[in-house]
Image (cartoon, rainbow, N blue to C red; front, side, top):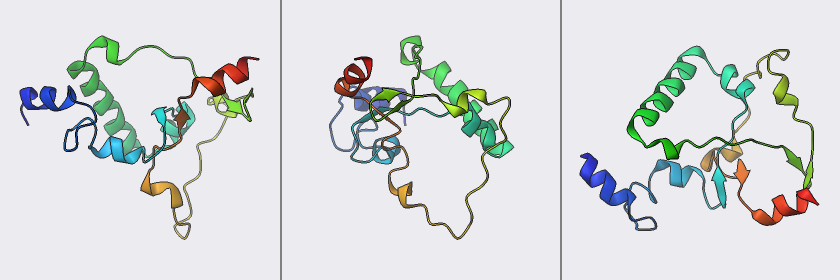
Amino acid sequence: MSSHLHAAAAAEPGRPGSTYSDGPVWHAFGISRAAYLVLPRRTLQSMPIDWQARFVALIREARQALPDEAFPQYQAVRLRDGKYTADPNCRYRRMPPFPDRPAADACTACEAPLAGAFVNTFTLFDHARQ
């Protein structure tokens, strides 16, 4: 696909068939209202080496292709029941990798693998600050 076609499709969010609002990432988030995908470093480092290399290469490609404002800095805060809670994954240097899922376990969340990873609701955040 030429960059001209991609730019036209991306400039029209909500239009069926566009790469922005009808692509694999759109569908991976499912029907959730999540606006972010947050992955702990421990999760990324637990992936097989070839997956890690592909992930890093894709992010590098995205940083070369998209403007700097597409990659703002954020700080993730873990919430449980609307309150701040300790994040066990922040000690990634002292923790082992996550174990692989047993082959017999079916992944029920795989239909929308990105759904609910980080819910973007100001109400929850404002409630947590109180």
